[in-house]
Length: 432
Image (cartoon, rainbow, N blue to C red; front, top):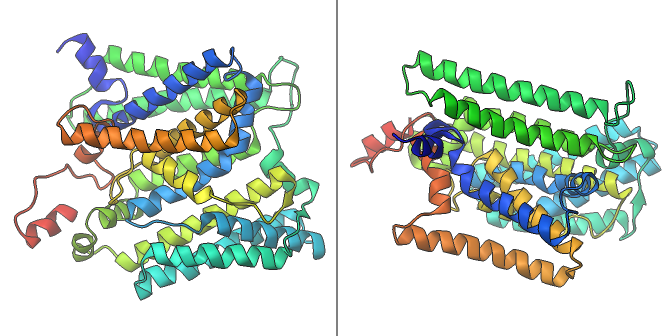
C-alpha cells in the first residue's frame, strides 16, 4: 500500500474513526479559505472568531440534541418556541420575583425537562408522530411566550448575562494572551495525544490492524495544529474577551454527548431504534423509554440554548427562537445524518453547523442582505444534498456515502454493516 493510500485511508482515523466527516471538513475549510480571501483576512481574526462562537453557540447546542432526535427517527419542530418560552419564564421569574440567577438557570432547565416530558409522553406512550406533537408544541409555546411576556422584552440581571455574553476572566501574569484559554488549549492538545495513544493501545489489544506510525504522527500534527491555531486566536482577542462562556458550555456538551452516543448502552440503543425500531424492540431495547428520553433531552437543550441567547441579548423578547429549529435540522443533515434515522454523529453535526455559521458570517461581512443570505443558505443546503444523492445513485463518489461508510462498518452499536438478512430472526440478530 502506497503512502498516499495510507494517508487517505487513515488520516482521519481510517475505518474506525471519524473519516466520514472528511467531506464536510473539506467543505468547511473551503468556506473559510474563500471568505478569508474575499474579506481581506477578516474571517480568521480573533474578534470575528469570538463573535461567531458567541453568536451561533446556541444553534450548535440545539444541533447536538437534534442529532439524537433525528438518529432515533424523529424530528422536533418546537425547539425555537421552547427556547423562547423558557427564556421569558426565567426572565420574568428573575425580574418580578427576585429569583437569584443561578436558580433561574435551574428553573429554566426544569421547564425544559417538563416540556420534554410532555412531548415525549405523546410520542412514546400515545404514539402520536413527533412531527405532529412538536408542530403543536411550536404553536403552543410560541403563543405561551407572547402571552406570558405580553409581547414585551424583559431584561435579565447582570450575573445571568455571563452565560451568554461572558468570557474567561483574565488571570495570572501578562502574557499578551488570555491565560485560561491558553491552559484550555494545552489541555486539549494533551487530550488529543492521549486519545490517539489510547486508540492505538485498544486496537493492539484486539489484534486489529494499526495505522502506520507516520500516519498517526501526521494526524496528530494536523489536529494539534488546529487546536493551537484556535487557542491563539481565542486567547489573543482584545483585553476582556477570549473564549466565550457559551463556547465552553458547547465544548462540554459535545464531549459529553459524543461519549454518550458512541460508548454507552443508552447511546447505542438510540442508533438501534433509528436503524430498525422493530428489530431493536425484539432485541430487548426499551423503545418507549428511548423515544421519551430523546424528546425530553431535546427540550432541555432547547431551554439551555434559549437561556444563553437571552443572556447574550440581555433581555427576552417575543421574536426569540424564530426558525431556530430549521438551522439546527440543517446542521444535522449537512453533518451527515440520514433522513430515515440510524446514522449521524455529534461531531458531524457540529461541523455542519459551523459550515452554516461561517457561511452566514462571511456573507454578512461582505454586506450581503439578510434576504440573500437566506436564499444562498437554502440553495447550498439543497444543492449539497441533491448533488450527493445524485452521485450516490450513479455509483460515483458520494460525500454523505463517504461520511457514513466508516460509520456503517463500525457504528455506535459496535456491529459491522451486514448484508440484508433473509428472515426476521436474522434481523433480530443484526439489531442485537
